[in-house]
Length: 90
Image (tube, rainbow, N blue to C red; front, side, top):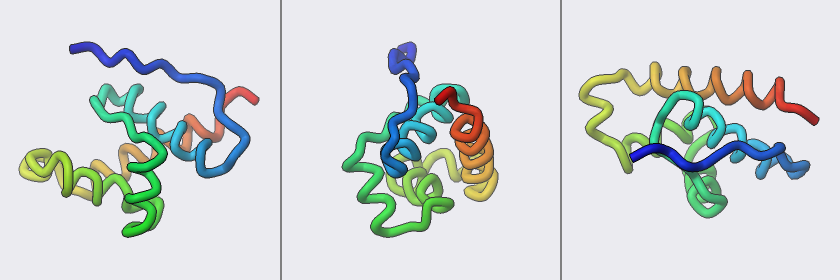
């Protein structure tokens, strides 16, 4: 099933902008994930920003950890998220 979420201009609120950057990274990486504000807040309550992906995968996609190193997935998403956030149109 194709991903139907499409990126929108990033919001001014820093946390919402960060959430948007994550979802944009997931879309670019063709990961079938989309976090809402509640999911992001829950992840941030138990992990640093850098470890949100690791916690999410461990809780929701544990089968991926049989194939990919958690640090690889984390770094892949973080690098993509940072690039997209830093180069987003204003």
